[in-house]
Length: 313
DNA sequence: GTAGGCTTAAAAGCCTCCGC
DNA sequence: GCGGAGGCTTTTAAGCCTAC
Image (cartoon, rainbow, N blue to C red; front, top):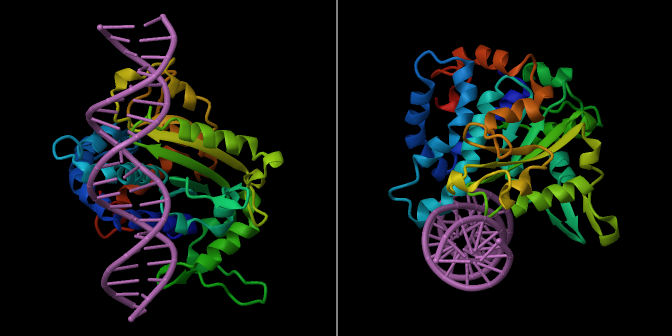
């Protein structure tokens, strides 16, 4: 159980989060807050509804003592919290959120690369979301995988206890047109940075500007070859919430993003939706049954010494 | 393989500009 | 004068690269 390619990917994505000191420090504060929000004997509803409280959780590490040190790590912390939450809500599905770009399969990395003349810029992706195809190789225990490279040798699923990048790249190449990908641009404040997701979404939507030697994708992989691609924005925001109404420039800048705009609060119509809405909006194809069912099945496995204990709940 | 250096990206608050 | 929009300053974290 929880030994498919997407689920091992998920574990490695979360373990990478805990590999940074920023997230480890924040987690000491966040964990009890999250546990309190969930309450005893929580169900899938409490898990999903954490999306309404992510801003509250994030702010518990702000306030007093928020010097330059925590300030500069704030972006990493917010990205990490969003990544943790999305993976928790998609547990048991074929949806995985990845913060560490080097974990992302190379064909996906290539497809979202923007080429500005000879310059390839692909570092703008805060969180990369992958919906793995609904094909047998992604739904079975990796111990049952039997994949051969072009010269007939078996590709081992694991190397040094980690997913073999060769296998990941092989599959992403073979089944590329069945993959879905998403980018979630995470920013703690909203108004200062709303231009960034707006402009990138424009570039991705236009699929480059051939006359200007600006293009998307390389090595033969392009987002147009994927089943679906979405660009989303997720903010705390650290600014006063009262500053945002349907007519604010910063709100208008992100209302038309292909994947929508979200924040860590309850939904305010025509301003921003709760992050918990991102799943049904963008990634619904990745659930094996549905989000509630998958989470309900997973809850008994979250405890210590269980397969999903890496969430550190 | 490890240590250290370098590059890049990140944020809050303050400041300025401008239209009403 | 007021408030929204946009820009600047400063310091730090993470990750890659290089040298040993």
